[in-house]
Amino acid sequence: MIEWVVLLFYIFNQSLILSFDYMTTPPKIWLSSPHMSGRELPYVQEAFTGNWIAPLGPNVDAFERELCAVTGAAHTAALSSGTAALHLALVMLDVGPGDIVLCQTFTFSASANPILYQGATPVFIDSEADTWNLCPEALEEALRYYATRGKRPKAVIGVHLYGMPAKMEEILAICACYGVPFVEDAAEALGATYRGQGAGTFGRISVLSFNGNKIITTSGGGALLSAEESLVKKARFLATQARDTAPHYEHSQIGYNYRMSNVCAGIGRGQLEVLAERVAQRRANFEYYQQELSGLPGLAFQPEAAGSFSNRWLTGILIDPTQAHGISREAVRLALEKENIEARPLWKPMHLQPVFAGAPYFGESVAAELFANGLCLPSGSNLSPEDLARVTTAIRQVLK
Image 1 (cartoon, helix red, strand yellow):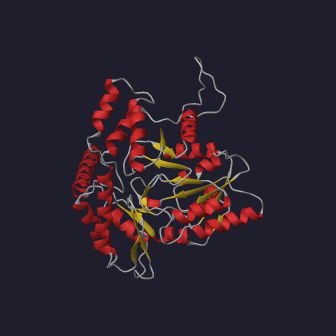
Image 2: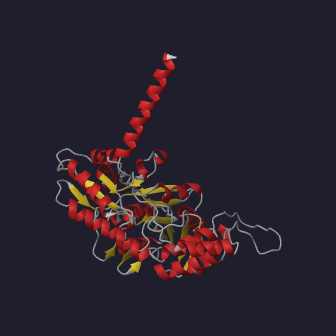
Image 3: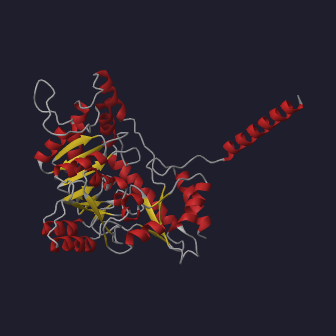
């Protein structure tokens, strides 16, 4: 009996402790959470009312047209993910076993994984410090290296990291010189521009992502864009299991189940209506952080080059321990975590990832240093002034 009383007392005591902890823990601040506007609902309701629940449908067709209007792209195919779009891009460029594809090393793994889907060899290229994106000098070094060996890469994949446009004029000129098509990974950059031209319109094939953490979302989804109508038509064909025209199921090519659903496209249509507002909100977050934190020792922000307009999808900072009295970016991240604030290191370069061990690499150590010292701060368009103040207060307490 005494043991039961002790046990019940212990359980009651622990419940009080947990309840107290719950009440005293500040609400979670996420890195980049979805932000619904309410404008999505009529389009989703239309899909339900019309029973267009399966892939394809009027929302998909309209979403593709509206994406063209927003980005300036000539043709678009709405797909199930940005990774699916990258995979189809390589399929349509005839990438296969024995081929080489050059890829920006400083990026998320989805930029590089489709190279292996096709059995090709990824060759990773360093970043430059001005935008943190594909380094033109390292790119040219790699293309020259393979040209002297009579081996032309099948494609170059470049990324606009965190919504910051890469040095497109230089990169495209180098690719054209060596006759290699450029695949533009604009997954993070919808709403960004380079010299007045929208991200997603620079590649022979370009891709977007509408994952839940992106500047707008369709829950999950992506898009393939191109000035060449034949490529987009082929992408749609391959993405719907490559079904030939016939009354029965006839297939002469390998296809994929990569098309976007009509329901998800409805969400995307509502999200597109507030894209400009979302970009403005994310840029305002960046400006707030810059204003509040710029004086701290060793802290610097991702630059925005002249002629570029970043959507500031994520606010990226660098912390130099030699100037910040030995404080590292990991110390700052852990301090934020203690305050229930999500922050995340910058992308770990692909050439340093175990899965790509031994892959060829061209460049120096820019990407590695960005990873070592870089941190992404909460950047959602739904952050409140109180949220932003909590983040900056926590950072200032560490970098005094």
